[in-house]
View: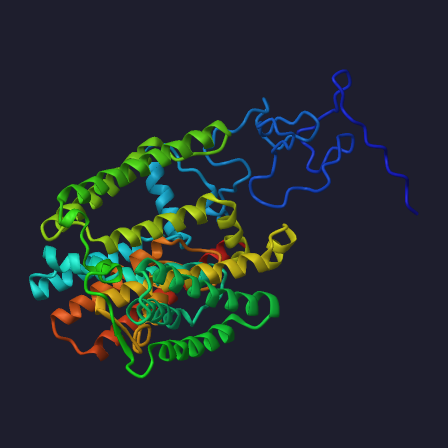
Length: 488
């Protein structure tokens, strides 16, 4: 037999609700909260919007201190310090000991970040420099920065698709078809090169739109849609090029200059300016974020950590500028790739659209119930990846001096996917960053260049690249398993 519920009494200034610190459950006389907290960061936190934690006078106190003040533990409220705590929710303790403990905790939980890639780049440089004795010369490193533009741009688009937990097998064909359209419109139809480039990139966006519509609206799996696209756009590429199969670029045109142009005709001021500006902007952005988090009452990284990161970045950029200036200066292709990486990184981390991409990749059903237009996000991601593939195809055409039937074939697609995965983007969706595309393509191009310098067969290059890709996927799987096991 059900007994009538006791009416809820609302606290007032003259009759506050009683509290009982020793009570395990909710106070029956306090206001109803609807549900108990189910995740980290919710326990003992007021939902009245006042920014206070553990000081709700109307509910049971969860703070063991008799004064009801916040605990001295630097970890955020509600983040458990036990083995199941997510290390990303825990703030480091002050001092070097706290930072070291925080780093060990992240590594133990599988949050390796870009560390394996950076270590891999160092190992590759040391090995090939030891074998060839001129791998680290300025002209060789400059060539590496030029050659990564085409596959790097395609890899940035791959990152967006992988964040959704999907795959796009058509990007190599999209790159080849876009380059063919631009070359034919310019050389055979007499169009302005700028108009031809815009038409080629527009055609790439239409290809991506078709992929997205069939996947998001019709429900055809992305693997099948993009596999069909790979075949269809390869056929379009051959049809546009015609019987000749090759169309040369204008020797002094825009497309030809994408690979051969150095800012200021080798003026060293451009490289130095970028090397100084990049860490300065990074430092300003980090300090601005820290101020905003502290103003909102959230945990923020110590200022010394930000200074160390900015100093490390400054050392890397200044060393890169010095090396490039020993040869021909700052290549345009590297600037375009960095601009694409920075822009897409800002979109992913600082905009609502970026958060929705991560949400869809992390859990489609949860994102849909949260009000995210899943179909729109999926379609837009395939359009963006196709656009970047089309831009990458123009850089490939610039490097080889023409658009032909082989452009976009071979290992172009596999190199782009491998770059994204090697750089740290998860194949399972919901985790990654566009910087991983840059790091990953640096690894692949460094291996390719080093093996070319020792005259290794192409078969050896494929096997080594495949082994590196497999190692990256295995590491991603182990990291995901470790994180899932620890957070259960």
